[in-house]
Image (cartoon, rainbow, N blue to C red; front, side, top):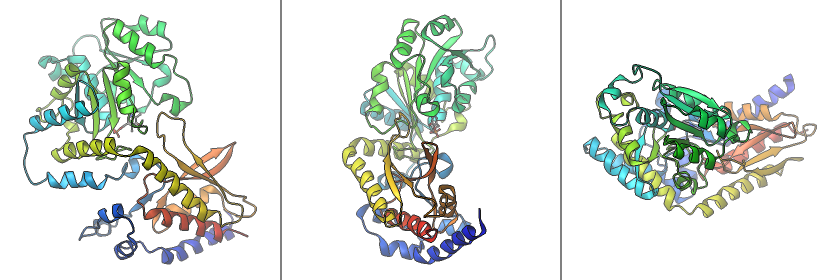
Length: 418
Ligand SMILES: *Cc1c(COP(=O)(O)O)cnc(C)c1O
């Protein structure tokens, strides 16, 4: 980076700190909408007390950035249920019955996230309700249980499968899949967003995958952790015939980050529950879900299903338009709404580009200036036709943060304009 550019960024940081104060007072003063007012600041500012920087998420639901923000009604469910004890067996059963009704499937449970659901579902497929086997996981005597996956579906989260002691058998087409099934096969896993992650088409599509599993009585499991919106996906895969389905609670469903959903066939869910807390020491005991998270996850799902999704989508587009309107006042700046093809992370964001001869700063430098500025704003970087661009996520912004983000980006671009 050239020295003049670096000093330009420093200047921006200094000036915008003053421009957009982010203290509790500034926030209270600017509170606009009803939703915003529900995000009340607590009496004690724990961020400040620990010296932790609050971040504005103008990117996506990323685990390292604490996932998503729980909606006010989720926080309400958590605090409203925190003052009484509950029998955790009863709570898990009853919340499961309700969620299963909501999702039109046989049974459901709240897990400590989609990764935990992968462990519990696999463990259930290995042991059923056999108590001896349950105690021995992940070291069952004899040959290792086998889980079938498409080679193009292998991903970081499949370590959750091998955590149970199972090994993964890779196949590349329907014929190979059928041939791979043997007496050690306990399950087959479909990674729904493999296409989004790697850009490689599935070599066995959903229908063929389910059909082979059914023919050979092998339980099928689909990981669709980040695959809402659209809301229809919450119903789609059990309808297709998958025996187990998981979604993260802490992504766009906006439940607790440490919660998720596992649902599908009753016998498998009942077995999965035996593998988890409050049972004393099964493989899932370290993946405990507390009482408040169970209520919170339920409240989040209820709110998600009841929401006007069309209106919400329009609101996201309006936010992108609002930001673009502000940024367009900077010469040469252009913006375009981008919606990934999916199935993961299908939400709109604003892709911003400019003529770097006129605005002498790169997208990466803007990204850095936003991140290290005050307030800290995390955006993302994208590419189109080989050109780098700045991507501004709008779906996780609190209503009042839309203008803050727009003005900060504008100030940074303006400072770098010749
Ligand atoms: C996020 C994600 C997970 C992990 O989900 P958690 O709820 O954070 O445990 C698993 N699989 C996929 C495809 C994901 O995107």
